Length: 503
Ligand SMILES: [Cu+2]
Image (cartoon, rainbow, N blue to C red):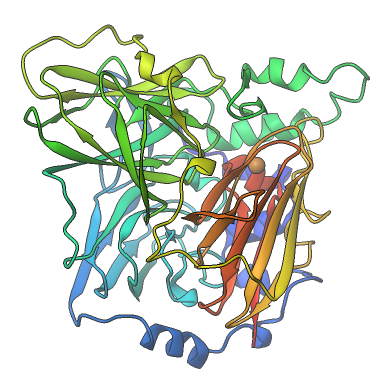
């Protein structure tokens, strides 16, 4: 079987990253000049007070996740890889707003792991990312327990080493029973870029990217890294689309030649929850023959807006409603700049799907990008007025693979700090030639357009090369929250910092 090469991984990464993989205990011994000591982190009582303020139904949802090595059929292609249980995606977790989740993770991997509850405004000590939550050791069990305060489309994945580029992901759906929604059926669509067990392992990819350092030293060789990675450019992404060309792109764990099929009836209103679980791939998604009405960004409602396609960076989610036509229709997710696609099928009647390579015209019509959407008044932060300014300058490049925030890779950079109750203007200033999907744990923000108007609520947003994205953040969830690029390899190289609440 193909085991991740953790020994090689140790040798080629900075000491801190190795320490992260080795588990939480190792962190204490790390020199972390810019980081608060444990005593300065929010106290257990602060976290408990925030938890008490969340809605509580008194109902519990329990589940067990078993991260383990197994052999998975991607549709005629068998891969030995790491998954939760024995499926890709892993088993969905579903709860109502205010329920308490008690999710036990039994780690059957050969290295420590974690489960991060992406997008959930969770209590800090259950975030599933160090330093707030210790990693789970090999053979150990840990129960994450937390309530879910907001409805929406979320997901879970590890926040440990390069675990995020295996099959370790699952949808997390939170329902609001008082708002059942105007739809007849629900289709959860998880997008992924796939290599493990068929191409290079994630540590091999990281080593290649990191080992390529210095190749851009010669003037005029700017395109070298892109040529070597086999990844091209994307107009939607403003330049280089990514660092890694993957052997396959998946929807719900299936390759395009053996797609999963979602069945519904003609005329059904279908709510599609799209989640990009990839590590280095932005997807442009369209359903042949259908327009999509976008209703939510990263779990939060937006003024319904009709599009033909949607662009999703890693970690982003969109909910859209379609009215199903009669027949068989491919849902196609183009891997931006990578000359490949993932697909699934919608079947409502007779007919045969087009060939696997078919690309619907919707992909090039009205493409929904984040600037087009506006949070509904119920979830809007109301005004762009703020009382503190925070800035995250994104730097680095393919040549030296030196991705960083505010001048240094994590953990050498200074954390951003905020106080409970403050409203911050946070600006992501991308000084690199590549786009980055920037994700903040435990909190959501609202985009501010260049004219000062407020856009969508998000926890992950695309920042195009050499551009700035401004957001408003209302600080209401004390903790130490990781903020990072959701490109697994950029994050591992150091494009991460934290937002620390001052006590
Ligand atoms: Cu990045």
